[in-house]
Image 1 (cartoon, rainbow, N blue to C red):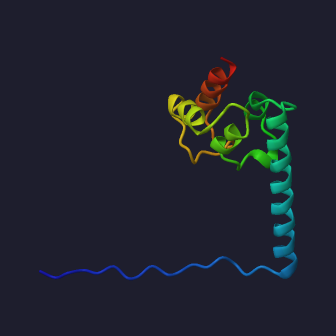
Image 2: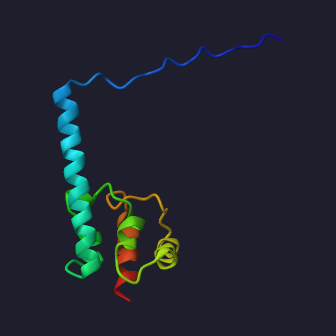
Length: 113
């Protein structure tokens, strides 16, 4: 009986980026981090509601984790945020942009209570 071996898969690397491209990506990432930090401050102070962020998320929040945004809301600790996510069958690693329509509507329903 002959054994067959599969050839090793080629290692793929990210394409080389120019200094300008790397600096632009860094600038965009820093801008997103600053805007998210400000959004979290607004959530904590009550100037913005979590329902508004989940219902119609701005572009810079699309890749943020739902759990992290819930944690920025006053009176929402790890236990309550985990309970909301578990009840709505949402993974802790799910991003706001990655929520399905069902998950988004269930989460909004639970937040309105």
